[in-house]
Structures are given as C-alpha cells and as structure tokens.
Image (cartoon, rainbow, N blue to C red; front, side):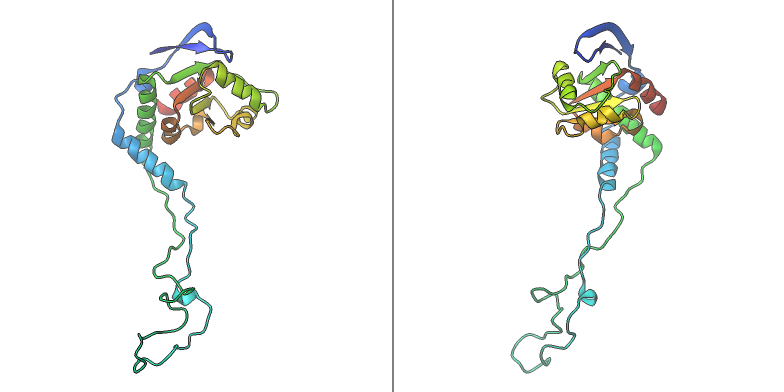
Length: 208
C-alpha cells in the first residue's frame, strides 16, 4: 500500500512511500497479539514484593498461655498470623515474572498490530526530523499540525534520536521509540502511529 509523506508542518510533500503488504497488509492474528502483550506486561513486573512469614519475624517465641484449661483458643507465640502485627500466611516472595516467546511469534504479533493500524488508516509517515536541543513546545506544535495532538500517538524513528526523545518524554499522550525497539504493546496502545520516513526501511529489515 502507498501512503503520502508529510512534512513536520502537516503538509504533503508530493512524495509517497510503499508500505509492504507482507508487514502492513496481513490478516491480524489476535491470539499471537494477545501472547505478545501478555509477555510484555509480565516482563515489566519487578517481582520484588516480599512479606515476612512466621520464621522471619522478630519477637518472643514464648507460648502465650498453656494449651488447655483456659477456656480460650490455643495460641502459639506473639508472631502468630492470627494476631495483629503478626506474620503473614503464605505471603508474597520475590519471583521472576518474565515469560519467553519465540522470535517468529513476536514478529508475527508486530506485523499483526501494524496491519491492524494500517487497516484503520491510523498510520502517518513524516519526513525525518530532529532538534538541535530538546524543545517540548516544538514537538507539541508538530503533533498539532499533524492533527494528532488530541490522541495517544507513537512516533517511530529510524534510530535513537536523543533530542526528539527528550522533547516528547514529558507529554502524557505521546511516546517515542526507535524502530529497533518497536513492540506490539506500544503499537496497540497508540491511537495513531507516526512513522519517520527512515524508520520504514528499518522495520522492513527487522520484520522481513
């Protein structure tokens, strides 16, 4: 499919680029997309949660009263989970939540997400641009001129552009990622996908 190339003023340049159907025109595989998103979110978890269990509590281990004959329930020491401030039964422990996914599955998921965006006409292609220094206002102006300032957007650059990244990182409705770091979750999360012209070739290389 062909798509017009825009400049940062939101105007057509008179040029168009070809988005390969093998990447932007396939039938989306919803189950594969689900697996990729599930893996991404699981890998974001730190897994550092920890609660003290009975053997890890500091406190007296003296039995509070004798087992029988008090008329009350039998109790152990003050660290018992039955008491306020006591230990926790089967509390959370540090663990690794990361999941593995085959490269071909992740590649198909990204293709499916890109194809879904293309089918909904939510992909824009702009000329490569950069800033001499971080300019959040300038970045917001670009989004406004592209008529996407009111939507969640994902800008995909060919390589890591530090000045562009710093210009947009404080904007809640905008995200910036290089073509090498493009993932299924970020694609689906964005309402509109903005591709820098140079990023298209990098996407072809990684998903071919």
